[in-house]
Length: 151
Image 1 (cartoon, rainbow, N blue to C red):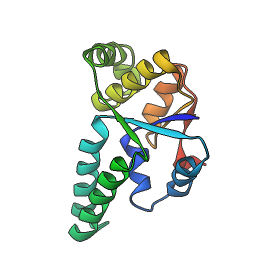
Image 2: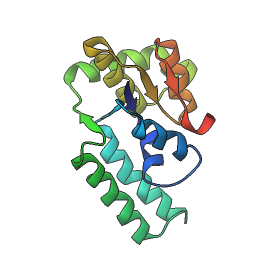
Image 3: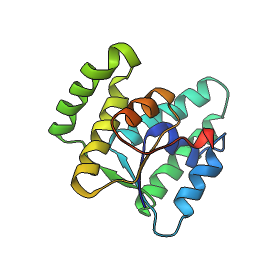
Image 4: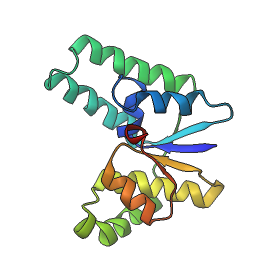
């Protein structure tokens, strides 16, 4: 199966928290392939910083978190797909359609646009997110959604 993870779900792979077990199960599933957009490595750097500033982890743990992200990517445990000009245009359309009434945010619209492109090109079985707003909008856009913190 082909899964596209946003940053909120992918972070659970590198820091144990509610939903980490479900994320690990997807990664461990035979034949599963995990994708993410080019935004994820940048956002995961921000996630690590936020966890340090809130006291959830130490700076040393943040370094290990980020090193694990890089190692996992290099081992092709997940594939980072680039963002294309088409994705930005599609994200703008998604924001026009969903931002005012459903509070879709810019980076989530870009993740979703990336997922829509992938689904059109070669199929995508599920979008994985821990963000309720993105999950709701993705479902409206016809995606099967996995919310690891809800399972």
